[in-house]
Each structure stands twice: as structure tokens, then as C-alpha cells.
Image (cartoon, rainbow, N blue to C red; front, top):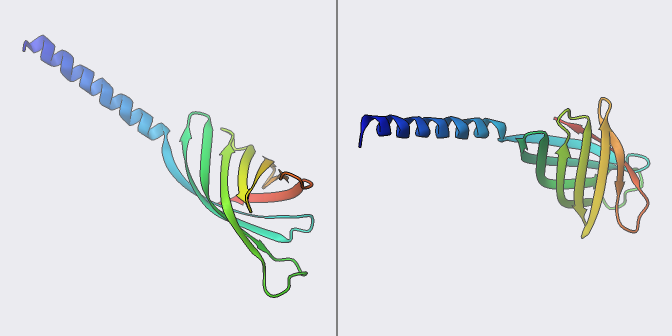
Length: 136
């Protein structure tokens, strides 16, 4: 193989490695803790540990979700529900869109950031419920 071809192959390999390194830094795994409450009186405590990736302008996360009833009307201990949450944050993090799976239902949440994310969760066959979330 000639020197020119070796240099060309080395340059192509270098460009490929730099491109892969750039893509790896753009798509980074992240972990977040989601905490909050839902319900008209904030009677449900929400917590989730989510992991995800950031690629371009979209930050997507998913993980297990727990809702625990903390209202004063609990009997025989607090009720607890588990499910899954998938959320997306806008590039500026000012808007959060999420899908929650609880008790076999797929619910949608949309919230805006004003110190915390405030919005509502819509589940099939039920009225919308206010939800407030924080990210740690």
C-alpha cells in the first residue's frame, strides 16, 4: 500500500473516531429523580427515578413510577400504585410532556416550568387531574 493510501486511510479513521466521539457526547445517559403530587388536594405523592438520553433538542427519560396516597382519608394504611413514566423535556426545559402507565391506563401529562412543572394529567374516562412535579 502506498504512503498516500495509508495517510488517506489514517485520516478517514481519525475523522470517523472524532465523529463518533462527538455523537457520544451529544447522546449522554442522564439520571433524574421526579417528585411531586397530584390530585385536587395534592393527596397523591409521586416519585420516579428515570434515566434517559439527550439528543439534539429532545431530552427523553423513562423509569418506574410510584404513586402513594397521602391524603387524610386513607384507611388501613396508604394505598400505593406503581407504573411507568416516560417524559420529554424541551431543549430549554420549560415544557414537560409525559406518558404515565398506571393500573392498565395510559395517561398524558403536560406541564410548564415556573419554579416547578405545573399541569394536568388526562386519563381515559376520568376528569383531568392537576399534577405538580419537580426534577432533581
